[in-house]
Amino acid sequence: MQAEDVEFATEWSDRALKLMADHGIPPCPDNYSVWFRYASGRLPELNKEIDERIENNEPVDLDTTASLQKRYFAEDKLTDVTLNTGNKLNTEVDQILKIIEETVGNSTALGTTVREASEGLTSQSSASDVRKAVEAIVSASRKMEERSTELEEHLQATKKELNELQQNLEKAHSEARTDGLTGVNNRKAFDEALAREIAAAQQGGAPLCLAIGDIDHFKKFNDTFGHRTGDQVLRLVASCLKSGVMAGHFVARYGGEEFAVIMPATEVLSAETIANKVRETVQARELVKRSTGESLGRVTMSMGIALLQPGETGASLIERADACLYEAKHAGRNRVITELHAADSLQAQAS
Image (tube, helix red, strand yellow):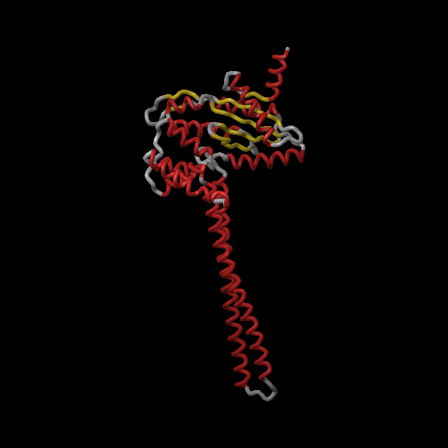
């Protein structure tokens, strides 16, 4: 929590507990963590989903709480894994430095032993004197060899540990940028990727298209068949997008029932062809209720596509793609509208 939020913590806590009491939510830690964030207003998507469940008289039970935590608190998990990794690394480094220090100390001790043995020997020394000097040197050498072997073994073990920690970090990083429901990239990952791809396109002069799609009449579908079936629809659309776009394209859940596809090195006509194939694939899939085998009909989606202009920002590109999506909705839904179509439409209206 940031310093400026500290003074509001008590207010958020009180509000969270009151909301839980008002809605009959058991005051267990998992429930409290969700409702505290709801009270803070820091996660608009979380608040929107809870509000919809309340409006539709749907329960916010422990199963729902677990789902919400998985989908919206991925960053917390990433932070925890990062902190744990940092602590483990610090421990490993401390142990390595300790062994190295002791090994160097043994090396110094060996040098001292050799020097003392050498100084103690003269041409008058007996065989017994020479034997004692050699035994002292051998003993010191063995101690140093033992510490060197221990250091090597520990370094090998540390290497293995570091590889595992790296894998855990990469997994947590991936999960923090993945939408928990659909398995595609989330909004945070989309924002990062869009900034990265725009910079690359502006530098290299390659075309870049952005497609934003929206499931038609999704709220009505949710109200009719329930949120679980609505979740099934979202997963279906995400799957069609992932399998329908080209390699190098970036699919993300933009928010709610909206999805976005970043299309590097893709011209408008090619982007339109790809989007239409995805749209047709979605429309061709008939939804069936698993528990009863009842047909739920078909789902359609509308999409808008914009081409990046020289010097343009991500916000402007999103706004233009969103405007094309609006045109697709306005024109009857279940279609793809690009800026080329939008320009033709405006020209026709003017004439």
